[in-house]
Length: 115
Length: 116
Image (cartoon, rainbow over all chains, first blue to last red; front, side):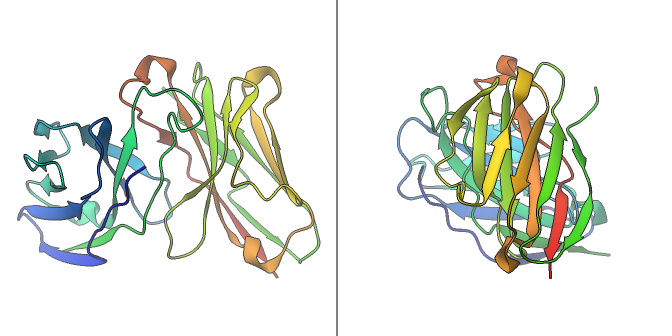
């Protein structure tokens, strides 16, 4: 799976949009971009994923550049409960074999939302 | 729907002792994973099961770690003998076969191990 690069930490004011960047310059055509987050003392939680189109769900939006070498996770109105480590992961989906379903986590971005 | 259950939440042992962690995945989830998360790092996959068969255990230290998933439901991860560097949170995750295309994994809250 391709390697990702994320800033180690970011701050955001409560109520403002949080924009978390991720670089994945070596991504392959069949690799998806996944975002998970991990709140303190909890297991990681799935947020969103995409291949090449922008995606939105009830939690966040995912913007993927046209060349797919980078993406941005957007939390439109950050709350204190969004303080967490955010992981950007790229992986092949549906390929079968031993890598199928495997998530390789980096160190992620620590997002701190301030009052 | 009930989430992934893990126990114990916390365990403190001395080095060279043994420990076992238990995981009960979400009902119907055929794929089960054990991850190790050392403080300050992202989770690292130890082993992946599909039903009761091992799919990937390439990063499992087999000289001291073992895992099983009898009957394709619950799973147990054992460490014997433990070393100081095994201090970590052990996370269990499962995935529904219906969500194979999305790849969403559901994680438990983890079992925190401290080796003294």
